[in-house]
Length: 170
Image (tube, rainbow, N blue to C red; front, top):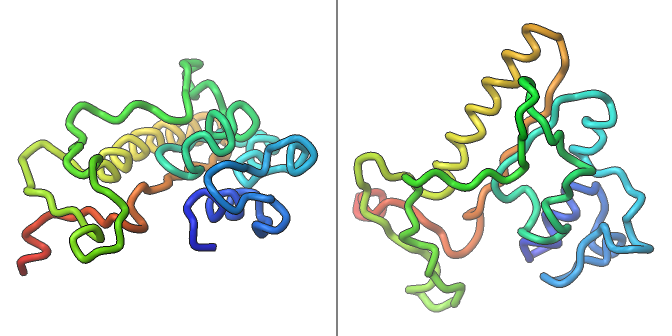
């Protein structure tokens, strides 16, 4: 399906948009009478006693609300600390393309950034964050043998593409 929210709802619920009733950026599969009783992919792992964490854009923000917390995600980490689904991005995340529009004219299909030492594209910053979560989950597995599921969604698999200018100029 060609829209972000319905695609992500379908992938995470395992159902097509005609079942999720998510065709746009207004609906989601957890609405009453649709999929409020369905078991989503990460929820299946959580219900099977896995440590389950995710970050960034596995679901479109707000669809379902709170990225499907608490149904789909562990709310505490291996050390008993709070483990929210969506951590705030680190301060070193670049916000250079946050303003980029979604027009379909030639200049609206990509956003070029100039690399800066110590600054990362939004998805790079989220990947760094989830790698630290993965390390915690692996350490927990080594101590307790509790299996884990770690998911990472990206913001920029679609228009507007965001990438460093040197790759464009090459």
